[in-house]
Length: 366
Image (cartoon, rainbow, N blue to C red; front, side):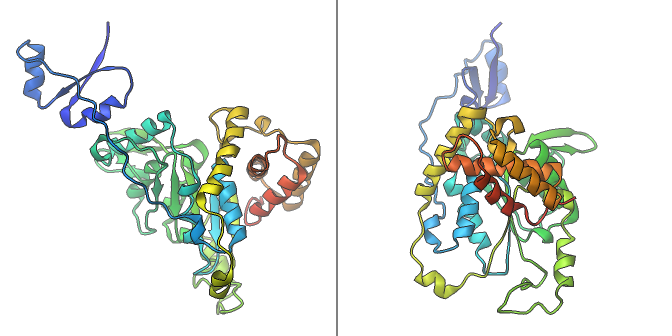
């Protein structure tokens, strides 16, 4: 027996995104009853050609200098890695994070449908138009736990799920509530978030790329040669203690940024634009797809990473010296894999491991 779908007329365009299935669109319940009683004939929704709304994303060409930060952003984009940027106010953390979406490829048809379903459930799918670009969500640190993970009487998806297959940017990371920060651990590990309420239990997809930013201490000037933190080093220690070790260990890359000098900014040459970097990211992701299918490097199994013997020995020595956890060791190799892909290398070499290790300096020790 062939099965079909009946939907409200207002959601007809959304239903058409579901693929090859028979669909009827009813303007109201009476029309649906009349249809099944043979008094009225409902028609399938008419396909309307909709042009995608123009997307305006900040471009990397706007940033002069900051080569270390630009490099980390490119690696993160290539492998889908989570990234924590720390540095004093004005170091350019938020400016870099806002430009990550411009480096990411469009969503595939399957990914677009996956994301669009979530936005439909949240009532955020405009005009039934499918979402084709990776979402970018940046909730304020005062956001409640239900706003982040989802909830309410109907257990709607929260910011974590709305960032599915896109970017979740958390600025001022330690300012988020402890419960909100700990709620990140499940989706960072499993790619989904479970919402339990008295009358309902729902699991939403939440495979997002986390980009977080923070000051080195409460006042923001710990380690800044131009301004003194009057409560150093206690100020920085107390601030970092707001972030648990297990959470930090789940973040692939950690980058300490230096103050951004206005004179250097004005004098420096323009950087590469996003289109140029995005092409390198596309090539790196193509290598990933040929090697391990749909999984990005951030999710790859160790056996998929293709590590040379010399690189393996170096990685093990670094992990032993700095007492990396097993998770930290694996994440270092995954980042090294992305660095190798950007270089067009089939196997991870020692120089790729050496660079990847610099992004594990803040955490990963047992």
